[in-house]
Image (cartoon, rainbow, N blue to C red; front, side, top):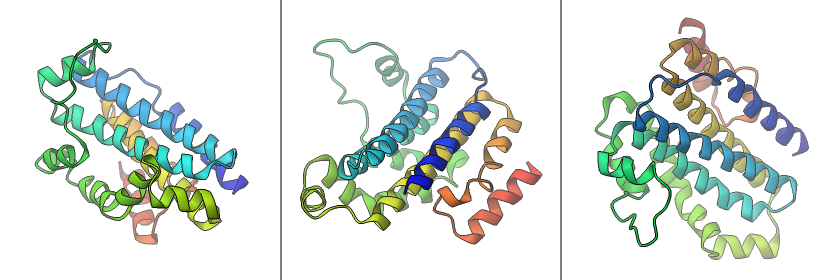
Length: 217
């Protein structure tokens, strides 16, 4: 566990260094998308700190926050209306409603019609299909949360939560790279997959694909 947490911290530092470039333009859409992506990575760091403190149920709750913030970042870039962008780019106003902002399912539904993110949709859907119920339970003090608080959090489950978080962080790194408008930055993010494969949930085929994309650009 300690080794994985330390390696995960190094992965996040390396990725932030790679994507530390100005955004492609000064548009509200790009700026707010970047804000949401950075928030997602902040949640990933918080998840790791909670795991280090032995607060695994709370760490699992942060995984949902990380997932939603990443999805929001991609949705903002490709789907958000001017009204929604205006709402998300300004400080909260008393009495203002966020009802016009879609929840996760609606964001994924909207993104499904965007050709540019067609490769991402299966990853978003897979996590929603297999993990959403448990993540909601941890957020809302449901059966998963209370049972793990009573009985403890199995180490193998904790390790997988960390690796899933790292998977999401890598996707977020790709999003930040896209926002720079510089293809070499995205290639540099992909190159991190090999050295940090032990921190990720990757099958061998996906690992080979990522390595091939990194080498060819």
